[in-house]
Image (cartoon, rainbow over all chains, first blue to last red; front, side):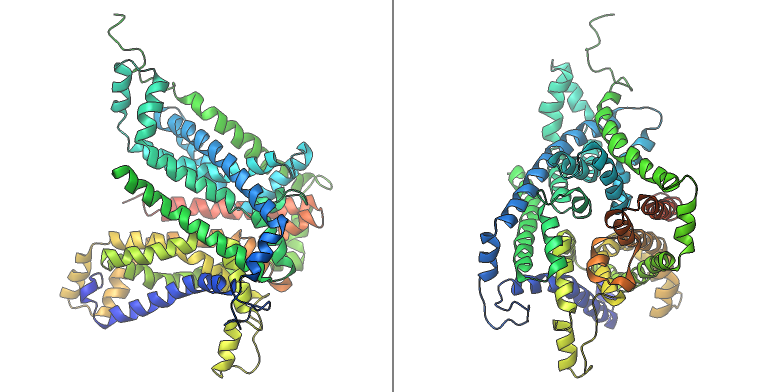
Length: 266
Length: 282
C-alpha cells in the first residue's frame, strides 16, 4: 500500500504536490535565468519590460569572454584525452591485476572526489607557486585531471567488469597480440564506458571552479573563473547570457550518450 | 610442452600492474605530496609547533566560522532530507515512464553549471528580486527581506545544490524495500501512519542516514555557493581557508584550517563506509 502507487489514496496527491513543488524549485531558477538573458532590464527585473538580444551581443563583442571560453575548451579537451587514456590503463590494471593493496589503491585513486576541493586547490596552489606552474595551461590540466580521473576510472572499470574477458583471450588465441586484442576487441566492446568517461571528464574540467580560481592568472583564466570574477563585481545580465549558453551546451552533452547508444544499436 | 600454450593467454596476476603506474605517479606527485606539504606547513610555519591550531581554536572569530560551517551543513542536510524524501518516495513507486521524466529533470539540474545556478539565486533573492517582490505583492511583508549575503541565502542556495544528491540515492533504497512488508503490517491492523512510522521509515533509515551524511560532508567543504550567497557573518570554513591563503598569505593557519576540514571530512566518510554503507551488508 504505501509502496503501491495505485493504492496510496489521498496520500498520492500529497506526494505529487510536494514533488511538483520540489521539481519547480529545481527547474524554475534555470528557466528564470534563461528568460532574463533575453530581457532588456539591466537590473534584472522580472518580467522584463521588453525582450532583446543585447546581452548576447555584448557577450560576443567582448573578446575576453570568447578567449576564456576557448581556454576552457582547450584545457577540457586535453584533460578528456588524458583522463580517458589514463583511466583505461588504470582500470585495466585494477581489473586484471591481482596484488596486495589493490582495493586500497582503488580507493586512493577515487579520493580526490571525496576530499573537499578547497583543500586540494590550496595545496596544489602552494606546490605550483614553487614549481612555476601557477597560471599555466599545464597547471590547469594537472589540476583538472586529478578531478576528472576518478569519474573516468569509475565509468571504465564498471564497463570492464561487465566485459567477458574470454572474448579477448579468443582474439589472442586467433593470433592477435595482447594490445591488438585490447584495442580491437576490448575497446569497442566497452566503448559506452569510454564514452561516458569522456563526457564526465570533459564536464568535470569544463565546470571546475574552485581549482580553476587558484590556478588562474590575470592572463589565463577559464570560463568559470571569468564568470566568478564578473559575479563578484556585479550581477550583469551578460552572465545570464553566458549561463544560458552553458545550459544548452550541457543539455546537448547530456543527451549525447543516449543518442550514441541509439546509433550503435542500429 | 612449448607451443601448446598460446603466448599471451597466461593470466599472470602481476602482468597488469605496470598499467597503474602512470596514474599512481600523478596521484602521488600532485595529490599526496601537495596535501602533505600543506599539512606540514601548518605545524612548521611560522615556527614549529601547534601554535596555528591553538590560534584557530582559541580565536572566537575562527571558532565562529567553524561552528557556522557545521550549523549551515546541518540545516541544509535536514531541509534536504525532509523535502527530498517525499520526492524520492514518489519517484520510487511511480509508473516508470513518469519517474523517468522526473529523474531526467533532477539530473539535468544537477549537471547545469554550478555558477549559473548560484547566479540564479543571487538574482532571485536580492532586495529587488522576484521573491521579495512576490512576497510584497502578496502583502506578506512591507519591507523587502534581506535574503542574500547571509545565512538564509546560503541555506537556500545549498539546499538547491544538494537536493539531487539526497533524492537519487534514496530512490534506489526505497525501490529495494519489499512492498509485502507493508502489506503484512496493514494486514496486522496497522493504519497508514503506523505503516509509515514503524515500517517504511525504519526500513529506509540506513539509506537516509547514508545520504544525509554524504550531503553533510559535501556541505562542510563547499566553497562557491556559500561565498557568493553568504556574507561576512555567515562565512564557512572553505572560504576562510581561501582567504587565509590568498589574501592574508598565512599558509600556516590556512594549512591548519584545511587540516581540520580534511580530518572531519575523512572521519565522517569513514563512518559512512563503516556503518551506513547501504550496499555493504545487504
